[in-house]
Image (cartoon, rainbow, N blue to C red):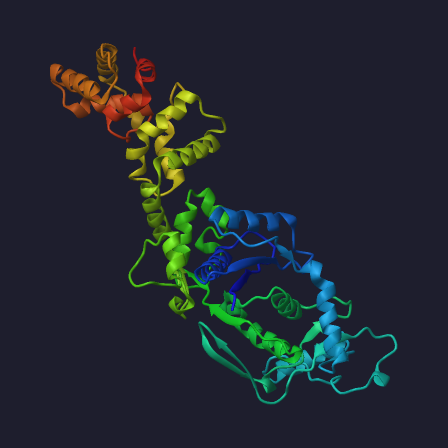
Length: 466
């Protein structure tokens, strides 16, 4: 059997982190089995579906590196096909017209509430003939669901799930205005798209039972179901806005790398022994549904950032410099000069060692491209008082005599000056660091001089001479 999965988001907002994990699991499962994933946009809620949301979803998937086969399918565009199937069920005696009024349905709801049970349609139009239909009524089409026995799905994550048919009612397939319901549309689309495996959140588990009834009455073979546990916050509560950023684009803006987010989402509810760092190719080779747990996974932003730091450190430095340049351009609101861009490869190795995100990396690297006069942090400004200007003047003169601007010669010059002035190296390095970076923390002072180059270093020091 060819494995075909689908990711089917509703375009009512950004690509939620839970949706991103669902897409990842579908993508990995299909890749692992030599199949492919399709993308279906479930845009039947026209009041809430927007083109901007569709763009946010597709952009998020592209950024994560999750591709799909063919064009994205619009569920709304297939409404005629959904209605066709509903009418076929009606013609086959497996569905019926229901003329219940809103008032009658409200009465059923109130009765159920008073009796302490969930609302179920009572089937009053199930066996009535068309001669009883009101002349001015617009009917819905309801499924004539089985009333005895049970509906069973053998879920590939949750195991066997059984619901007695007596506990369910005859669901609406086609509304009075002719528009299909979600339950019908999903079944028809999954069948027509030849979906072999439906992998989605376990909040859809009850939907699977209802959808299985539609499959059975149509005589269609149902796909395999796999309902994965939802993601909770670090406190164990259902993930919500109070737990932090929820959209994929928000994590991108935080400076998370797509490879790191894929790795982190993979480990939310799926495991392979004690492995934590799992590259994508290895994930494809290992991923299967038997590794998915039944318990809700907990999203922990600090853990994600720690994992991201690993990917920053191990990333190709040329590629990382390009991402850093992009982030600096965004931060500064301007392009970098060729000279500024040329400083990034020199400094990338020490800078990346302590950065958890691209934002942190850009913040640590900002001194490389900052305009003069430098903005001074308060602690840095305090290092430029007292004897500091006099010491900087001597350092400026010393550095002017350095002919070959390399680490060895710069180190020798500054160390020699400190010894000649009977100063500890830190007494000279600290005001130099403040003058060169505007901060009290940076890479080593010799490296800072080397990264900035001769003229920029002398000019920045010169800005603080009396």
